Length: 87
Image (cartoon, rainbow, N blue to C red):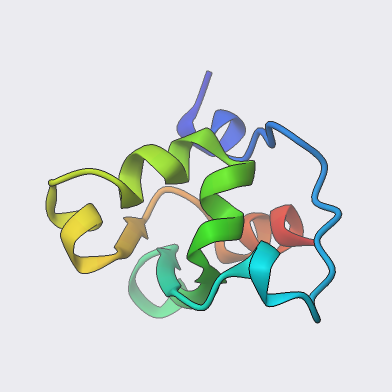
């Protein structure tokens, strides 16, 4: 299965109230989707994305560069696919 298909499998439905900080947390992480002229940067609530998507939990809680910088780079994922996965 291509990375772009399994990366966005959500473990639980996202029912977070955007006005409730306890669910969202305050830490922001970034994910860069696409490459070259098609690259876009997305800002995400760290707590929410890590709770809902196992992939991001592993990325942002690791000691690797993505975890320490709190920035994931996903050149093989199109920005449109990433945008739709957040809807």
